[in-house]
Length: 220
Image (cartoon, rainbow, N blue to C red; front, side):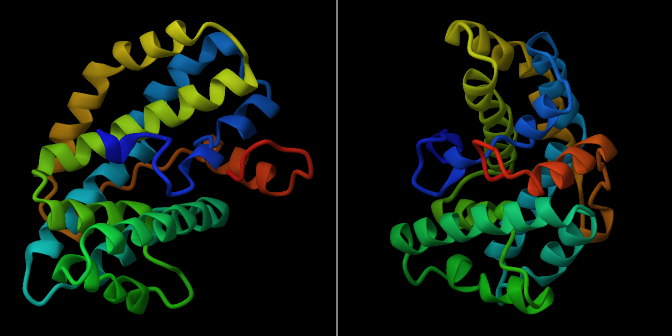
């Protein structure tokens, strides 16, 4: 669960999972729980499955994250969201190299960049690589992605819609069934070609608008 903690020194605290863009577009505080569940059923589910595929690739020899990276990039149509994921991936890569220097799963991350020139390894790919290096199971890796997504939203919500921190904890607890359903779906994905394309058009739109904003608290 430390991998899904916003306090982890990878830059995650500067991101809101597009909640800031959603709030700017009119999302009310009472709608945040529904926003969390919507992400768990769409973009977060795709990222969890990508992390599981990356975990499997990290256990292979030779390690090749190229197919997973390319498939995830293709299923992330928003340029700002790809950039945000790559930024978070960069911070997580730094952590992975500090924790597991020389491990083949971490050393092989260059294969992700080779598959998408100009785009650093995306965060789910790096998390899968770190999971392989640390011996995480597929379910643990998927759950880390999904829990991180939910708690990123709740942490941002306390700044954007100040309220009772206990209420935001309840939002995550109430999303547990959605998280576990997404874990099962992620583990069931067999290959990069089967990676679900669960995009969310409104989130893409809010991310694009947020990227052009000159007054914001979060990067993305």
